[in-house]
Image (cartoon, rainbow over all chains, first blue to last red; front, side):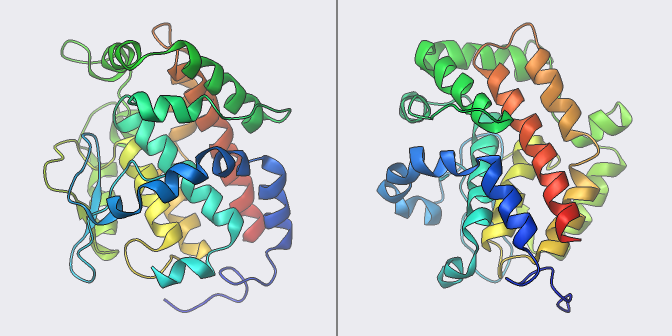
Length: 69
Length: 198
């Protein structure tokens, strides 16, 4: 995939960043930051709660796990 | 996970948001998750108001009550009140073309269903999960925004808002009502934010 002019870099995304900042998504990070660091190994475990859970086919073979948010 | 450093803070928040939605829609929250949700701060805008409502709902919920609610909403006897699959929302049936298209695209991105998961991949929780993974690079390099936007357009935007509205309006939903509000507000934010980057 070739990189588009400005869509995936830092440049040209200021309005989008500001919009996302104002949207208040960050409240989630505040409430869950401690929890996130408390369970770092979960990402590599094979445990997958029912419902969904996705895994790479070849490259990394890392189990992808839901409860790490 | 060295790539994580390159991810903008706002995009990390988006990924966390998708992960939370995915987690809550895959199965009912356990005691630990409920207690973390109780700490969410409310506020004035749509997302913050929904966070406040979710925190309040988490305070009165127990693992047993949310498990029962989840069962009524999504599993039921034969079928839950809601059927949170893209194919169902878009065609009225499960396992139709939207699922086939999603599977093709997942294969292109090197993503497959984890062992032990039986639900079709177009479940809302799976799609949220995939978005989170694309944003932070769980399936390889982080996905460029334009590609995230295209994936969102093809597999989520056309129906997820309706699903979250249905969840919010559901008679059986207590804890999940603010989850619906949160999801609906987030889908609107994603739609606008992608347009700003286009």
